[in-house]
Image: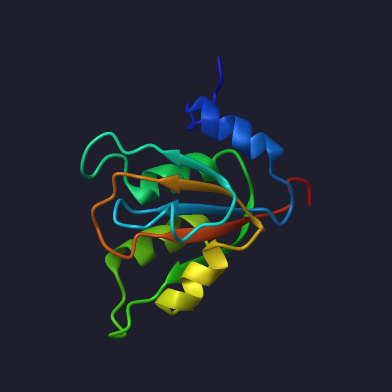
Length: 136
């Protein structure tokens, strides 16, 4: 039996194929995953509104892989969604912010290996993380 926080076999298999520099997109339930991602593996893990949250999935993934960079979609009104503090607390990294259409372009990059849509209901709960080196 696995002793990590991550129990989803499809996510575990996808993470095993990632390398240093691979990108993983975790989105809220509102994100247009099919239209705004490239030819990456797409998983839909939402089981009901709000479950799992984007932060839940980030924590599970972070328990398995090192993360060296995190990028989020910033609201155009300059506000800071509360979920950003949760992301920063989990990762211990500052979040790099991009405007909406720039973010969509980043998420359609060939560097994105895995995209996971959650049941998250809070808007702007999308995070694009870059896998770091496991041995430092």
